[in-house]
Image 1 (cartoon, rainbow, N blue to C red):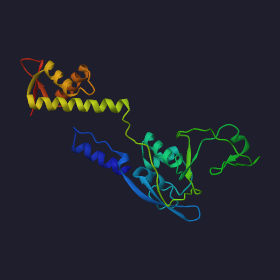
Image 2: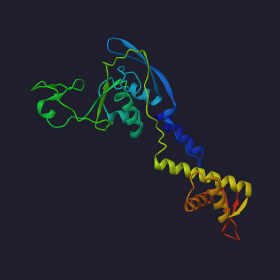
Image 3: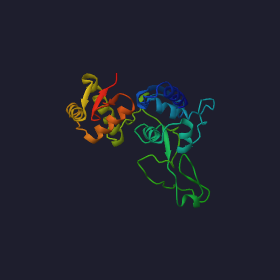
Image 4: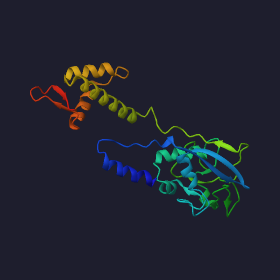
Length: 248
């Protein structure tokens, strides 16, 4: 996603005190796909799902297209420039969900190498004995997997919505900690803007009162106060270092 990188670089130069975060799961579009003997389906997908599907487009003129050949996870990630954890979710929705418009080809180990080459599409061994080789089963998407366009895909409906799990994990401890830090800083600024001058104990008590829904640790509040002082939202009183002043 080169366009997002270019904009991020521009945004970082223009605004040094703000952080840009992309909500990948918010975009959506309709994509027409042709499968099998000319069967056309209208796929309702997210923007990221559409980008990944276009990487398998058989038209070599398609930007980022890899001419419809099977693509390894690593090569696909290099082509679409999507973070690994996000790409895993996208591929899971397209290759492991109800509507499998892509084929997931797990890495085969063991006897496959001895019996000959394994076909990417049907799993039959070529050379030696013509038999099926069982691939290791896994419900998740692995970086060792390879993916291909599922030419055999069919569905009684012509208009299909392909769901994808939410990208924003509310239970992610790191994300929760970041959100709480932002909430604490916002409460501190709001209180100081109204009161202008407060002692450390008074400020902590008011923050705890306003944020009673998750009860922040006073030590964390102190660290957020120090961060706001560094960013020149607050300053210490010259005569009493235990008192803070709001900097308009």
